[in-house]
Image (cartoon, rainbow, N blue to C red; front, side, top):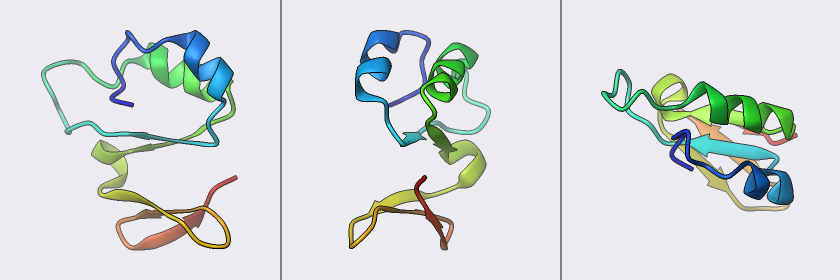
Length: 77
């Protein structure tokens, strides 16, 4: 998900992601991520990880889903 205002709310409601990674450059000229999409993600209960705020983010498969941000392991909800 790139965080533009054109992300479909119906899609987010159907998928109901536990974690959303918004890949966006800091101070980009596109105004991303859109507050509209951040609010939509929050409404679905998603934990939002943003590359402009959290740095490098990766999802690691294993016995449990884990999200890695700048070297710190954080478990998905």
